[in-house]
Length: 307
Ligand code: NDP
Image (cartoon, rainbow, N blue to C red; front, side, top):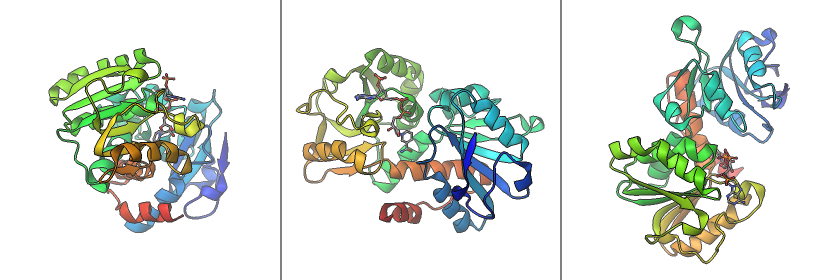
């Protein structure tokens, strides 16, 4: 494993798996790749805002060595970690206990390393709460009664679907390149959706809006990340209602082709958001799990956007 020392948020640069840097509460984002992660700067700002002292770094784990890397970090005193691609499903299996939202997602993006007497490692998934907060609070678009289209059925979509359902939209349609995965994702959430009075349907990318346009469109595919462009095969397909909201979970310039396309469909009164708001909000949820206090997010988001 290797560590990006420039990511240390306070105190001297350190190896998170070395006991030498013990003394201050330590956290990492673990992934492969992980160099692009903006989590260290986000958590550094949260710590400053809440007057808390901690170190948050990046931990690059070998593809076959996630568990060993995490165990070394915990042995060296690590208190918690975020998990990013491609380890969220492996993290789910490693957790001794899981929050209900992690259980529903089948994936873990946050660990709190409680010791055995407290029940062992707690696995959570904060991605969905982050997306919901960004849509409902930051974009001021309550989901209640809305028709939502979620494109993608990978780890990110699995992570957010349970929380989207708690917003009680009228309907969520899930479409994916591999339609079977969309159907499986819908099936795993049927009981939860019924409990919240939400209609769930699923299908392939060529059947995104069989009942007309949606009010909210969420791109949970990695099409923007990979530079593949629009996730839907037909750019002429009308899927977003006039005045609707489009979100790409990807952030930065690579999200722009999708968001520009969606903005054309939404027209005046429409709105678009990249995934930066979701990133900051899910980080705040993780921070609250670790530190008992949810930090303010607006200024962090503004700073990141300005940068
Ligand atoms: P996965 O690899 O688990 O899933 C990828 C998904 O994208 C699958 O549904 C896949 O379809 C689909 N896909 C890939 N390429 C294309 C394409 N060219 N056209 C259409 N569909 C495509 O990735 P994740 O779910 O973990 O991540 C998805 C995105 O979400 C990434 O861009 C990631 O950066 C972002 N993300 C953002 C977060 C944030 O906080 N803002 C948090 C988590 C993720 P198929 O199943 O058919 O292969």
